[in-house]
Length: 517
Image 1 (spheres, rainbow, N blue to C red):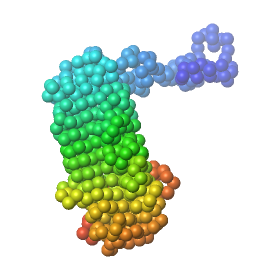
Image 2: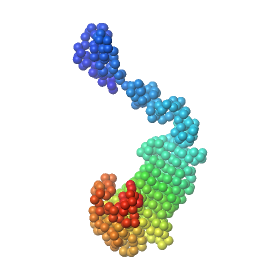
Image 3: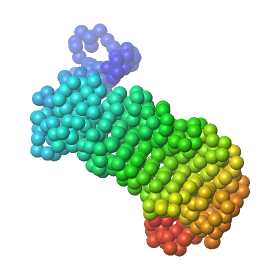
Image 4: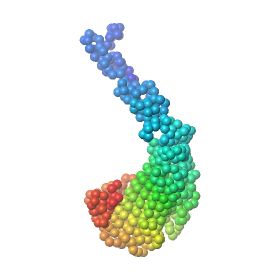
């Protein structure tokens, strides 16, 4: 491009300096003219009418790899080879592909003392390849990568970008499976056949799935990810577009049956577990959790659908649900009496000790009948209850009979509700079935169509919570529920609960012991 621009300028330059036949005949440049094609004037260094061209020649990318040589102000260490440039992948071809001063024979990404070209760990995968798992010769499926990494004791597998159409089972291997290019470019497509990824052989937290898109799963038991009696780490993934295709419709995004998995920093969206189906067994559009002690933190659980528990459905679980954004989920089934429970969260029965729902945003969710935001629906004398603490529960609704657009206590449950903001819900903000004993203290209840129905308690407050930026426009993506400095939620929470800075707790998702997010 630079050379073409210079050539176009030459006729006008000739006119400006009155180009002459004698100049052309003599092969001399008039002082200040240019003969290099770079549009920079030359210098007459000997005052004899001739000059020396000191202009910088135009930079060129001879091999078309987007980099020019360092002699031209660039960084390409070999402009005759388009596989060589800074940041290029090492190809085990004997060259210094990435211009770091070392040949690939010396590269050792995992610092294990073995050059990558001779190293079978990590095991690499690329869709459709047929290699042995080395960096420049990857296997073709993630299942091969997991099995090879596990069986050799390497326990590290990496995926190049692309779409892997398969259903992966970790088979008990303690393998850390990561994508190299991120979830946006690295997709596992389950072809609607079964769970996209399965952990069912007692995997522990060193079995890890990181930075993939998990989509198009089918079956009935966790179409996206199925976890049975296992405790893997699921981190940084996009889990979307998975649909339970046969009864029982459990856990569109993730199904957890016992175990203590860690589910952190994922986006769990647009999954379905039996929306509009029978009341029994159409549970947990985003996550279905039965038993165990899973840790669920920092996830976006949004726009999922189910019969009950649009975002999450929990029973018999000592789960910790914290610092999640739970929005836009819907729970509707075909039962005229039960009608859809827990648009955001349905705690069916507590865990042996306690189910914790703490420091979450629960907004813009919808249920057919019970608990647009959250419902505690059924007790069991042998089990504990739910503790719902420091959440922001706003803009939720119920569609049919209004049993708690914000929160709903139902069927003999005795949950603890403390330090929550329950505001601007489209119906009853805080509902109790019959006023049975439930701990409901230090909550701010304001601006609901009806603030209370049957549920009372001590030390609750009211007033506009004064969020930083929030509008009831149905679009949760433009909301910021951090309280302004003038918010009445500041420093008025349960005095036995402290904020992360040691002060008395604020009310809402950004106060309390887990509020620092």
